[in-house]
Length: 440
Picture 1 (cartoon, rainbow, N blue to C red):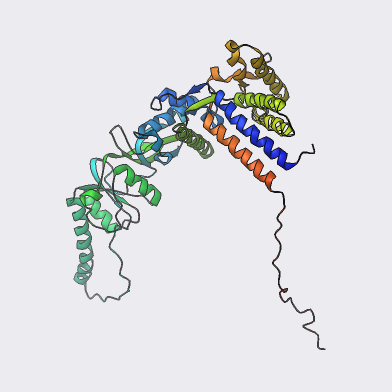
Picture 2 (spheres, rainbow, N blue to C red):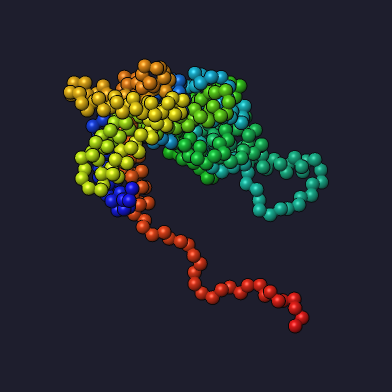
C-alpha cells in the first residue's frame, strides 16, 4: 500500500495498546475460588477440549482433583512439576485415576511388596560392596578356603543391612544397582527395596517422602530419613506398579494414572493434561476468563477496526490490518470443523456489529458469539454463544499472545538493513597447486 515500515510500527503500537484495553472489557467470568473443583474445572475444560474433544468434562475434573491435592497454602507457589503422569496401556480413559503420591511403572525388586507407616532411606549410590581398583589373583587349595573366601564379603554386607534394619528403615530406594548378596540380606530382614534409575524421579521421590538422598552406604541419620504412609504394589491392566502414597490431606506430589488403548492416544491425553495443569499455573496469576470459540477475537477485530476508522493519519491503515489479523482464529476453527469459513465469519461480523448498535441491556448477546464446531446447523451457520456453552479462555494467555506477536512483528519491521554474513578480510588461504605433477 506504499506505507513505510515506521508508520506500520507506530500503527501496530497504537493498536496493541487499544487491543489490551479492549480485552479487559471482554471479561465474562472469573475463577472466584481456586480451591473449588467446579470453579477450577470450568477454566480447564476448554483447554483440554482443544486436544480431547468430547472427554473434556472427565479430564478437567481429573486434572482439577490432582491440582487441589497438591495446591500449597499460597496458590502462587504452585509448581507444575508436582503433577506427574504415568501411562498404562489398556482399558479406557474413564479408568484413569488420581493417586496422592508417586507411582513407578515397576514393582519392588525384593520379595517384600508392601509397607505401611514406614521409614524410607534414599541412596544415590549402588547398594553393594565397593569393588577394589586393583585386580588380584587368589590361589585356593581346598573347599574350606573357598567358603571362607566369600564369608568375609557376606559378613560385611550383612553388617551394613543389619545397620539399616536397626535404624528403623523399612523401605530402601536405590538410585543405582543393588547387588545380589545385598538383595538377599534385604529380603531376609524384610526390607522393601526398589530401583529408581532416573535421578530426577529420585529427587521428586525425596520431596514426597521428605528424605535426603545419601551418597554413602550406611544407616541414615534421623533427619535424613523420610517417611511414607503406604508403599504398595498394585496391578493395573496387567502392569504391576509401585505406589508411594501419603494418606494425609496435603501431599507434595499427585500422579495421574492414565489409561488408553494405544500409545498415541495416551501421549495425546498426556499433552491435554499438561495443558490443563499449566492453565492452573496461569490462573494463580490472573483468574479472569473471556469467551472462547473465537468470540473474543471477533470482538477485538470489530473494535480495533472501528478504532482505526477514527484514527487520523497513515497509521489507520496499519491499525485496520492489525484488527483483521484476529479473524484468523474463528476462520481456522471454522475451516477445521469443515464449515464454510467465509459464511461463518460473515455471520459473526453481523452478530458482533449488532451489539454496538443496540442499547446496553442486550449488549452481551452479540459479542459472546463464536464458532460452533459440533452443530453446524443451517439456521445458525455454525455459531453459538460461547459464554452459555461454558467455552471460556484465559485472558492472561490472550494478552500475552497479543504482546508477543506485536513485539515480534515490530522487531522485524524495525530492522531496516539486511545483514549478510560474509567472509572476513585478509589474504586468501593457499589453495591446491594446480601444476604440482608437471615435470617442468
